[in-house]
Image (cartoon, rainbow, N blue to C red; front, side, top):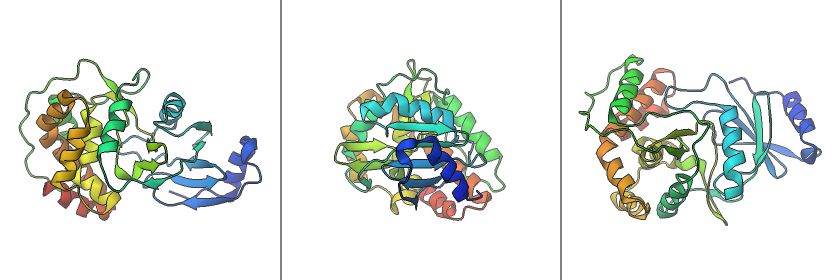
Amino acid sequence: MTPPSPAFLRTVIDRLPALKGQPWLPLAGGRTNRLWRVGQAVIKAYDSAAASPLFPNDPAAEARALELLGPLGLAPEFVGAGDGWLAYAHVDGQVWQSNPAPVARMLARLHQASPWGFRPAASGSAALLAQAQAIAAACRSTLPPAPPDPGVPPVSRPCLIHADAVAGNLIDGPGGITLIDWQCPASGDPTEDVATFLSPAMQWLYRGRVLSPPETEAFLSAYPDPDVTTRYLRLRPLYRWRMAAHCLWKADRGAPDYEQALAAELAS
């Protein structure tokens, strides 16, 4: 991604009078888009080429999610948006590192929100397997054989999912856990968020280590709907194979850290 110029930031700040005259500094951590802290807000510049088959990069979807969920404390408050950029209120806190139980409870709250107007995500084992096979087919290298289809049907009532609930998108602050980076929300299966958070590859990429068995059990025990966790366990082999395909897709396109992430996912 070509770094946006200072003129770009000045143009954005001119659209947001409350930010005029505020100091700005670049923020680290984003793997897809560029971020700056400006006063009490964050400005995001989108890289339209950064989307992957598994993780879209949709500014309009993020704006809609923030407007819906910001007042509920599940996402940052929406500040404004324009061509290729979005601004939201800065969330005080630290990137999540430990104690998965509050994350499980927060995701369960999110999964009660209306999914109306968001893209449909793959649901059910047949759709997950087809999506994973399509990603794998676009890679130069190969994966171990896919797991068998366990015959899990699509969810009867899709819910709103973040679809990128990795550790780096979780801010642990005074008000609890807040999800940031809403560029790929969807209407889908709550197990999608469970699988992404528990993914060994995603934990390694964003936290530097995979979850231990007790941490995984703490998360699953804290999620309040046992039907969701039971469904996740049935789908887990497919979710893991699909994430491995995503890591291989990224590694093939010049992201070397995804090679280690792939190894972590396959070792699980």
